[in-house]
Length: 200
Image (cartoon, rainbow, N blue to C red; front, side, top):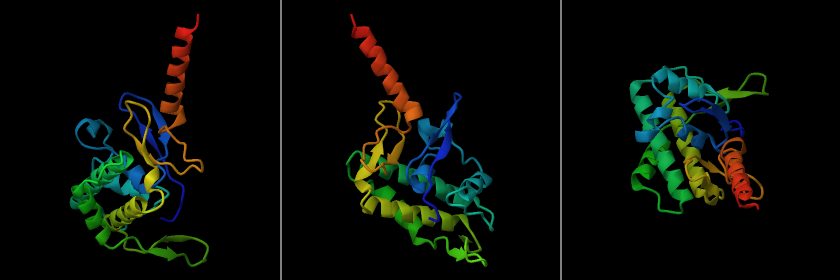
């Protein structure tokens, strides 16, 4: 990864949006949609959608080769594998073998290659830039996350109805919510109402 800043704005299909920082680009990617009941959150409808997501900071991988339908399918498979593995780790459960296999296969592809600009002060990705390379880079980040010191800090939002998963990069390791402006504030409001209901 070229930059440490992570996080994206997530949109609720019922309206509203909020900024969610999963603490890792691969986990941000895991929140671009999903299968089953998460299909309503899908953002990667077409090949161009994947290209646009990958081109955004911090990854900043602007495709020089158009994304293919096969790469879009591979991206969704990797996304699901990252989601499943992150939730398993957050629950302190064994990682699903299928998810591990998908992540490893994606990581086995050639990754993005960093390239220093002529001025020597900025960097980009050496062309050609393909989606398969970007997916490999995301898979490798997930492998580092799962096998590194932050592995024990992969958590699911403490709200009983929010499945968002993140890596707690805060110094005290006390992050509980996907975002204070969302589930954190809802929890505070519920707690306040509960106290008011019990006050004489």
